[in-house]
Length: 447
Length: 185
Image (cartoon, rainbow over all chains, first blue to last red; front, side, top):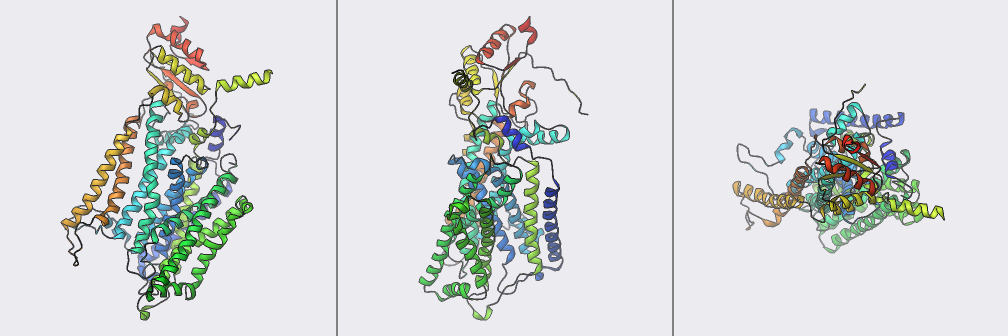
């Protein structure tokens, strides 16, 4: 950050706003196109019912739940970077946290689509929330599915508040550099922020509390998601290992997604001063740590299944390795355990092509991990007569692709309408302008 | 074309602009020493030196909102779970309790976090007086969200304006304005 001034930071970070290039519009168009295809597939499913999905007894969880867990997991890295690393006063966080937080919000928005899509009758989704009704019929708060509703909705709400509060000083900076209607819109969004001593005093106190509240959510949300599986008496799912295993996987995939999204953004926007190989190397190291935990968890769950001497449990794990779903399992192992080992080579994790390529494999591998857990366990339950092979249909693939379009559309829009790097916080990393420094410099020049 | 609106300066206010943080801190210190405490400081980033100078380590009351919200959420979350099950009892054999503490911990935890956040937000908005549309014109300077610090002294009597301007000037202010007719007259 040497040589940067407050004014240069404001100019550099706000420069890409509101000026879409042809390539940007093409990217946005691609995302909207994917979303439109997903919308068509959803319309088809709403018209004809869940029969258009590939479900067959006893497999009634498939691509939708896989993609739901995938998106919830993606969100975790954003909260880890914005909240946990804030409390640890980690300096590399500052350049990447805004875009990571945005990724979290959009990932949870993508995940939130799926419970409604999965149960078929999305228009009854409000039944999930406790509200006074005619028959005094209440939810079962002992059900992990109910916990999940509260975990994910609380996570989304807290993350959104944290994100928006962090944005306010920067929205005010945009307001002060625009005119006309845009200025009015940003003025309203800035809530009248002027950076007064009173505002900063309460802001910093509240920001610390928001970070402290968001921190346990990093651990709790995916733990609760894992209980959707682990609380069930289903071989292959019923394990106390699931919460740490899921949390490690979530951070692993989230950090990889941050690399996937921010690396091209930093290059295109020429933000080398703010997001560079130093940041990406830290993210790669997070992937190395969590990837190792994940590989260990894969090993332990197989070992425990064998050690339990439970034929149903062990049967699932043998089937995953050698059965009809072996291609899913080995894709997962290749993408999550083997390819990320390349990050242990400094030359790879300091090279943009290497960083980006490995992060793509991790994203793919983590989707397959959830598919491996869900599909293979349900298709190979206690009664061999019920064993089956679940194959997703074009409708399920279409809706999954649509969710990537939905996520991508929001992220691409965000890049052009909000500062993707935190202006005020970057300024905190710079030595403030001091008259004493200027005097010293004058004395040196005089000598 | 955007219309030009003239907003008159606030009576009894002197505005100063600082490029250097140490000059600003010195100005705050000297103003307090001279007995002028009715001022607003603006900055493009949070600086602990400014907060220390003005508030002398007094913590923000936002923390009480946070505590109340978290306690309210925690008790509310547990109560909603427990009372729902009492109101709609599912008597499961094998001695499973109707009000199960381990099962309700999840909702209690989530509600603690959620309402703690809501009340912190409320505390932030109330204490910062946001949304604000009525801050004085002297504070509304685009440079204060860019690379300059501002110090606006309010409620000045005619006799004090010159003294305040001298303090600000000696501290190293790059620009001083307001109550011109008094300082020149």
